[in-house]
Length: 450
Image 1 (tube, rainbow, N blue to C red):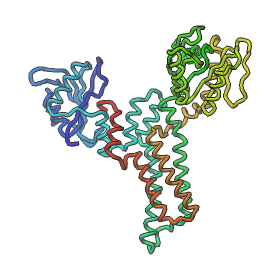
Image 2: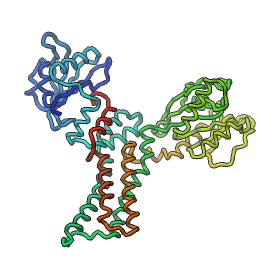
Image 3: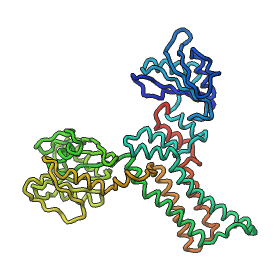
Image 4: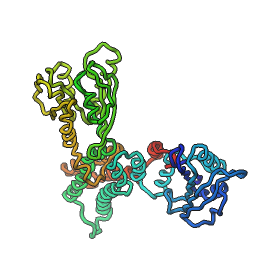
């Protein structure tokens, strides 16, 4: 990291201002070469200076320059931010001059990567930066801020500290048995400590689904036979005419998507093609897409027609949905009922999309199934990342393996390797241990300039 990097940190396009960020040992020196006003090498730290960017012959733009000297910066390096007029031509020209005078174009997420490598933030906090930028709801923003402020890191570090204490005591007992001040680690004491750690890991894992819901929302598939009112229900939930509604069966042949907020959680609705046996090639593609989506959805709303009997297609759908989160919406309850509902544990809501009856009850059931009111009022410090979850699950496996071996009276020295492995795995979450390939993959998903 001996070179100096630069990138556009604001969205490229027409706007009031654009921000170009420079970081590295020569950042102030390089910007000073293309700046007409005060000598930036002599201005106060964390100050703003007015002047002009020029190419040696003519003025390029009128700018404000913020000079921030390390280590009290985002990357802990010297950082300069150039605030120029927003516009593609102006912004690109300033960036071009920086590159001509010794800067290198930053890779995606490289500023945050440097902040991590320089020890300003841990890996959890670095990933929270990207989550914060991608936040679409207030709950997602708050969860990202909690992670960025280190609240989740503290939970992980607390568990690692407990593991470290166990490892240290085992080490002392084995290598210095004559050291009387060290507590004697017996199987009984070890079991109590490992049970405590296992409960901590269970609490982390139990709340991962809340984190996923806050971050990504609830993927909700509306399914059913053709012409039962799926598209009408989508339109009522979105409060707009998103999907085409006709009396012709098979009108919806591709996925129609929309989203809305429910208790601060994003509900991602997908209106699917009606499932039925069909020889129409285009409609069949839509049906196949629907079947594929069912397996991926967090929630399925099965729409049935109150005015018709259950068909073989309806029964097939009910069989597919046995192990899913399902709400049956019985539509057209303003018409005579011919429907006999099967005996099962599915949640059922009656209503009709013409008078918009039952929609409020449907939303209430979604809240109940996912505990949305509870999620929206709790402090959202959750694991929300597949990488984090898999590492915690792997660490728990090692702890459970230790507890199982204790039942067979294994000696504590035999268990030390599993305890150390759990400690290492949790360290990977916060970046105490990492490899370059992991960092490259994580930060490649960041935007340029962050």
